[in-house]
Image 1 (tube, rainbow, N blue to C red):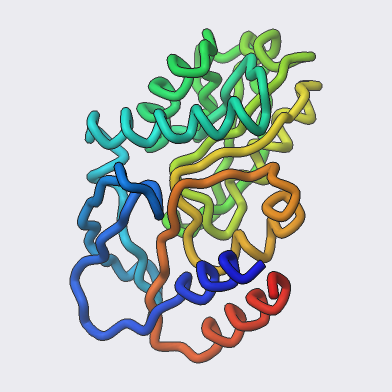
Image 2 (cartoon, rainbow, N blue to C red):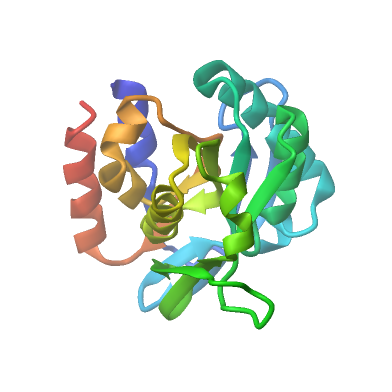
Length: 231
């Protein structure tokens, strides 16, 4: 799987004091669009290309991404009844995607328990961009939109995999039928490792990649070990 190997190789780059990374969505297409993302140090010697200003409020970008994603989802997964997405960055694009797929309900997994929730369902999660433990919460009222329904998990970016694992847990707990996962970007080397089976079997689709930037040899070594799985 040499094309995937090259993508994984490009998932980790050396930080050389650059300020921005230009992302292309989709990664290869005559009609792709580009956006310049600022590099932010999220922990010592680890920088990410922050997509917040694009995925939050860039209407043209979300419409563009949803158009390509909807085509891939229809072809690979068929009918989707419900989309489940985490609060908050992915919500806007999830709505555009739902409209194109004819999905009437987007279930949003909140990051805190609200006073109006009835018997909330809670799972723990971790994110590379958020310090400490997090939770994802669904109100019991949303249960009927997942139980026995064909559910698509969607996030703007999949990185270390904590959020996606928690979304999948919520679908299982609520007895939904998980048809697949979609995202705009795969970030860094981690998703290629954590979700190797899903990627190879076509159950996880994406439009582009976001490399992470580092000065540490350890992350490059980890990336090289992941590449071997796809050669």
